[in-house]
Image (cartoon, one colour):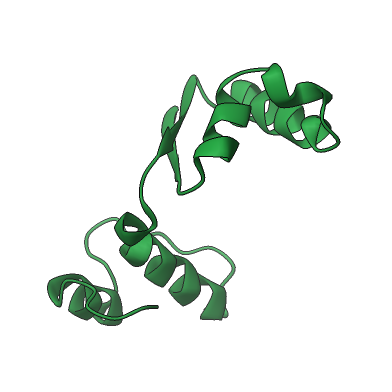
Length: 95
C-alpha cells in the first residue's frame, strides 16, 4: 500500500493536516507528526473531507476488527459475513 486516502468528517482537521497553518496551535505537534509519519510510510497520502454518513461501513469494519482476537487479519477476497450483511442493507442504522 503506497497511496492512501484518509477520509475525515471534520473539515477543520482536514485543513490542519493538508497544510501547516495550524502547526502553531497547541495540537500542532500532532498534525506535524501525522504528516511526517505519512511521508515516511507512504508514497502519497491525501486527507479528504467526507460527511459522517459516508463512514458507516468504515466504522463497522473498525468495530469488527477491534473485537477480533487475532491482532492482524487481511480480507483479500471478501469481507466477513456480518460486514457484508450491513453493507447490503445500506447501513440503515447507526453502528
